[in-house]
Length: 342
Image (cartoon, rainbow, N blue to C red; front, side, top):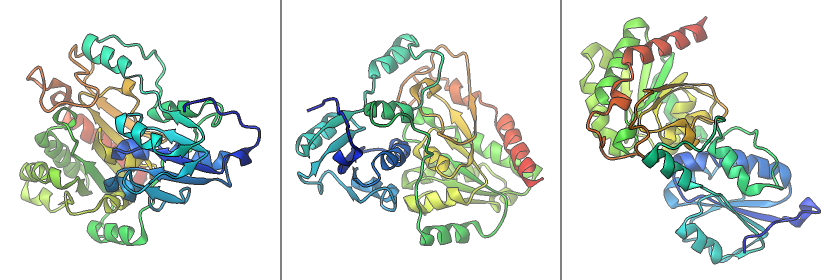
């Protein structure tokens, strides 16, 4: 059942399960809550349930005792279950457990739909991160969330990153992929940013993405001169999830679309240059507890066109991304890197 948990002693909670089945960014954004749960219940067992591809994000987290998948968790008992997915599958999973109390993340998708479809903004003036919205599931248990995001690449992952970078400094990581077209800055624009940065200063540039991003990475490389390509290494499809995390940890600055790798970068406190196309801040996915600069095209009546992204621009012009100046982005990157070197 979903009820109100009244605590008289923290010792009453001896076992906790956190459920977030997907995806990368959403899972990384649950890690501050894990820290707060550990502070509130220092002696409790804290487990996590997620889909198998995302286990590496959590496997080395010292807060957690075990990481399960929906297929492996069985019918264990937990004094407290925190369902941060709150969909049909997570509800069915929780129903199969022996749970003393269940708390659920209230998504309030109706606000997103009103903003997307009718451009009615009911979010108010103050920004509220998804991290804070997750915490809302634990009213009366966790008063606030101050912890940063945290992920833990292994020593082997860090060695991989050092080898891939080759000892050149400074390092700019570019997370150029995204699941949906309307969240992807065009390949030619990324190439223009890289060319402008390299025309101003020597930088090692690492392109990060999955196997599904290889073709887009090749487009970026094709838009560069031969000399510029010597300073760029595409790791799309060539690095595991945690090797990519280690590459982000070894970078000095991150240029990124609205994607899970952006939130991974925030776990290392990196300055983030963030590109928003169909995304908007009201959805709650700005970087958590790390410095960032947001680039977006304001004043478009069609934006946002979706709360998750689309496979194509419904208006056909894709101004939300195409009107973000590559020269302006590059100038910000160069200035930030030069200031850091002083």
